[in-house]
Length: 570
Image 1 (cartoon, rainbow, N blue to C red):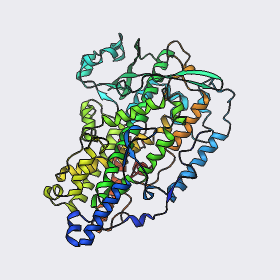
Image 2 (tube, helix red, strand yellow; image 1 turned 30 degrees about the vertical axis):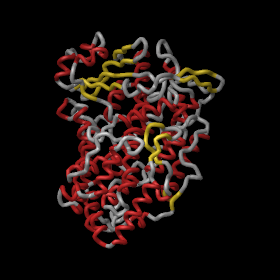
Image 3 (cartoon, one colour; image 1 turned 30 degrees about the horizontal axis):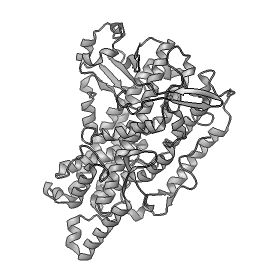
Image 4 (tube, one colour; image 1 turned 180 degrees about the horizontal axis):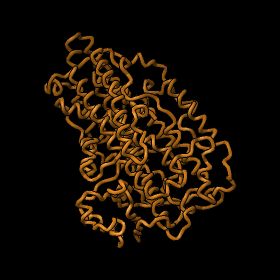
């Protein structure tokens, strides 16, 4: 039976959220008020530096900064644990009720995996074998669990290894050079992201020995402007003898290649796009913010709802989710220590400025003008980036009238320096701005709020729809790729069931809604008015998403305002 991420012994804070509200005070205002106020602020920051310390060498996540010891104020609330327990009850029931047709630990038909959803809802991708179609395979790059990896091909010479002999047939008669120039060829290449994985893993389950591994893969896609679909052209599976598979309908060889790529993509999603580049990068920034910005600082007041529960959640994830023997550890096709190395590498190579949403989209060449007119994640996320940027600018203007006011704030300077400082003294985040101008401050805060809310929601909530169904995303191949029956590549029933349980836990509930916190973190009514305007703008975002949906063949609901959280809280 799968181990729950949250147990009865989960520590709980009894602090009311209303007690979090306070009146924002800038450092120079505290210094100018009374000697006692200035002394109290200095003492509070000194205590924070003792309470919030970096730990770069935790048992299961070496090489990334986690919190050494969790202060009580960071514990989950009673309401949070209650919502978690309610959701987990359904997951536990799904585990204990016997699935139909379950007689052996090895699947005898693809339907055996669908039968594992006894109480939980079977994902749409599992129905009518949608997961096996080229249309679904292509669309998942744009609106699936990992929409962060696709990039436009800018140079035909760079994709030579991915071009099959019959490529013109697959491109509707067009030549590769022509489609590259038109901006209609795209690639997802996960080989570099998986360099920390050097081996597979041998496991014994139910008396049978399995050799599992993570196939390092790349895939070429083409935007078909007539059907308005992103279609796969080929898949390259790396290895001592790299194999190139051309798109070839419903043949077993092509389906095996797609399963291999999906296993690779699932690992990159979980360890890079999800864990590494939301949970972990924001942990480093959050620890430093707790250490360097006083509790009464107006930027602390802005950040609190977007950092809530994340430190506690990350600590529990490090001890359970990515621990040896966990459901995901069993599902992955490589030793968990090497798989977590993918997350550590994702952290080290993440650049705060270059990976900010608008820069990331531009760097990957996937704007609307670059030949990809329909990209659900991009189109919906852009609405939020603009709204958050406007909200943050209004908020910052309340406290900083000009660049000099920002540059003279010693707490902002200390925060920026520590976030950028190398390990173990700081968070070692590349590209974090110096916070010397209003523009830099607005950009930094916009990016932090966006990652904690929109980006995390976009990579978290599709997991039960796409990754919980093992044939669509097995996290590893359980037999050699060549000359195998498709079922042989997929995990046994036990690991597949554990994969369902863990991923449904990660998507089990929505704790709150982005922007719905006026009056809860600040007593400054000017700031609360700005927050109310921000939250009120969610209706316009929802209407814009409804308009986007008219051009989509598949609905994308993950960034509806009702589904976007304030923080990385699940």
